[in-house]
Image 1 (cartoon, rainbow, N blue to C red):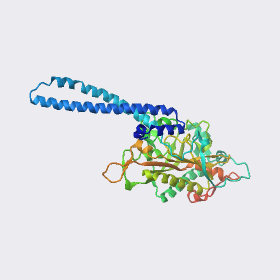
Image 2: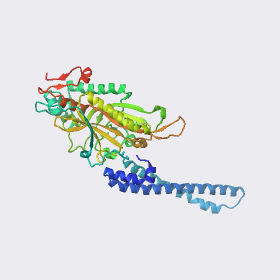
Image 3: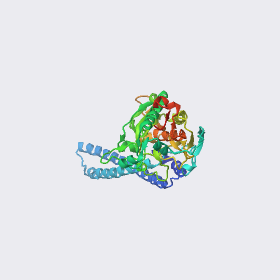
Image 4: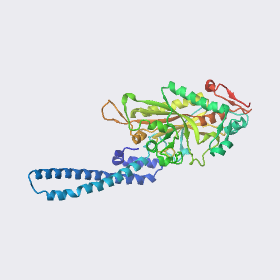
Length: 426
């Protein structure tokens, strides 16, 4: 959520940012917010004036009564004030709600280094790492390979759960768990605190984390309950310190979340959806950081390096892109995507890294202060990064490590965790 002072004092900054994002439809909402906020502040002042007037008249009445003087004029003047205040308060409640909703729908202010563009085709490549394999045979996609090894069953999963779910078997299950443990051990050495969060969240904290209206095609809602299945451990980790104040000495705070992730992916039409790449349920290790405002850009690069080290250790060829204004989403001020090379010759997203500055913290009311007992200095900054989403990591490992006989070479870094160096036909 943006600072309302920015809306009042520098709306041109927000309007320029909306134009960059291609979100011109929200410019009208911005102007409506400015008008409603002005009316809201006018009513607040009017209520204060009426309360002040009521107090003055009350004192006059009390003084006159002590002197046995007539107070009928003052009583008549007082009569309508409570009703006026009541009506103004009703209007104020409505305006407060409307202003907050409109403010929460405005996206974060983008960093100057975010490239201008309409969609993912306009993302700017920052770097590449690794040599793509030169197959001496026609490579298969990971689903074909897994079916050939009898490690996955999509038909029976579809029978009981629908499209986007799988039975995973034997070595594939072990590979999933190996990737998780590998990422945990790596990040613990980097000073991250391991967190397994609740897998469901109430509406209020979820609205603090992200725009629920924008996420409605992603989240699973529990029928008859004020609960949503989490789409990523980033969300409950961000909300973990809702309505709290950090002492400066406590920051930065670095979490790694381990959790299953649940996503409807209703809006995934036209995207690559084959096999494990886009699932309704998958496992993920997430980096999440709370820090001081002047630390967040440093941490954005640091957690990016962490992810890249993981992919290098897993021998996954990848490229990094700076996500453009039309593809970035509302929460982030800047975002990197890491895309892994796949056997069909395309790079596809395997993880992302976002600096959300104070946008999430303002929605969740998470602040920091310099000295205990003093007033907060401001809002903390939050960052999130996909350390490893096991489903997409497995896609990359399987497709890049496939052999002509249908077997799969396992990266050396995972051997201590899997207990095997390759997966082959039994």
